[in-house]
Image (cartoon, rainbow, N blue to C red):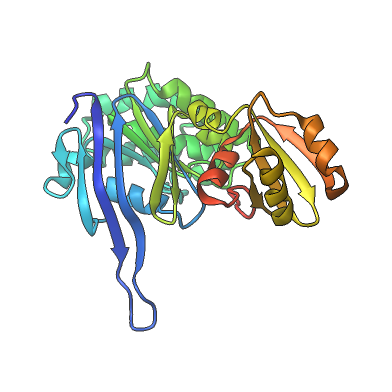
Length: 317
């Protein structure tokens, strides 16, 4: 195992057991992935893509059907306790006691981690200052806003100074301002690159903050790379043509100009490089085009390239 690799995932598959009425579901299919120490990796995909299952495996909550996982040199299957000691986790669903104060939630969690009282007191004070909640220590959690509660959860996960922070849809339910504040704090707390972060999300702007993005779809990991590199692979721009018959136009443009496109949501999307003339496209096909837009490639375009589907529509926090 490469000493720079903190998490190594090899040929990982998992099938949830079925019933007489419902057959088993294969949630992960042969996932291979290495995550370097100090890296932030985003797992990007829609609901049902396998993101949460993969995180459940990494947090030792689920034993995979097939494959091997090593975290910091420890085998997840053979020594799950050694894996758990390296982790801090912020779950998608709230994991705080709303009737307890901010300070009481951290104190109870620290004792469960086995932290000494003096260390716990100092660490709680440092983290609450870091997440801008030092003045809220005596307030009950159920009196806080959603964004503040998520910051308390982040502080709680970081109490034992874990090597790895795992975040499962951490901004679910937050408004845009609270989302931005959460990410600003997370980037500050990464502590000079020593903290490794694995985050699942279906939000493109969140995935774009990561060092690498792993795109999951129907249990398979389709691609994993720097988000800028993934966008560069599509060319300089994406041309989107709205028309009455996108499939027919796709064939005509391919035959006339050699351009390959994908039909999504009844629109034709074509990656372009620098030597393609838009004037030529309009000269040949203007009567068949209702509207035309051109933009730099996004991670949504990357998802479309690999799946033929959009990531955006139909997903909520």
